[in-house]
Image (cartoon, rainbow, N blue to C red; front, top):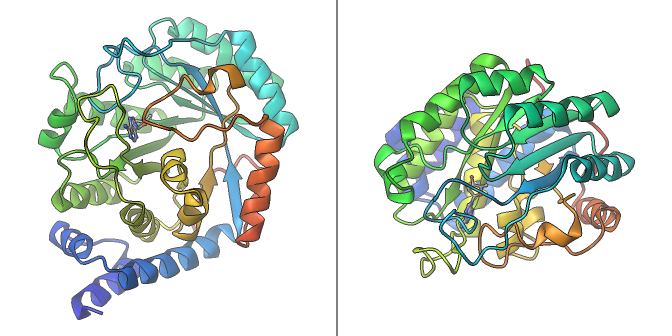
Length: 351
Ligand code: 5AD
């Protein structure tokens, strides 16, 4: 193995930090052997803090209506071929009820930037969930909102917020998004969420169009400095209606290597093995866990809408009932030596 790579991995393991150029060097020199070593070290780091526990989050996709037009995304507003839907408050609460009975103690309300879900409406939903299930965490993933709005949702009881930064390079951000969206605003939102007191998640796609090693190096440096509590990363998967329809799918190996590196940067981070990884490989979810991830987010949305939340081609959607899905997941995790637990699964700090 390249001596410098070995030295960098050891440094990362001890100091949880590398220079931007060292991250780039590491990314440019990822052989199978290096990826395996990163995974081994990442799993060891994760086990010290989280043992063999896998946290589950009940994902409820509340709306696929979106005011944004991100060039890569299947639910972008200009996609006329998308069958739009929006869940009612009662439907959302009923998903939580099913989920609670199955042992979910975190509900993730995720959706496009749908103006219908105003602060008043969201606060009402959040407070009802917290009232019915005081032992559960509520995670929101509803895109960019004002600081005042984030504050109101937090005051209503939301605990966590996921907002992927998508890429930490301003120019690359501009390549993936229309001019009306701004990198600065994205970063300000993340900063605001943290200031308010949310557990915050950022994240990016691996292998997105025009992405180069220096972009990924910047993503890693950003994660090192921003210190998110969670980080969602998955391979880019083209969507047939977008201008990136003919671009290549991101690599599962590179995605797993990124998961391992992020685990070494931040041993206690909550790191999901994402649906996108599960979509491009039949055992993608397991591969993510074996690379250092410790969270899985099964879909609790009503079966009738699951297919409609199509961010990318062939998004893995499980037609199975939530109960069956959870059992299958627990079985698969057990088969690789991990245990799905009934727990809010907050980040363990001070370890
Ligand atoms: N491939 C992979 N991930 C995608 N997302 C959106 N479109 C795609 C795609 N084509 C991701 C983005 C977004 C999250 C909800 O899904 O990173 O933040």
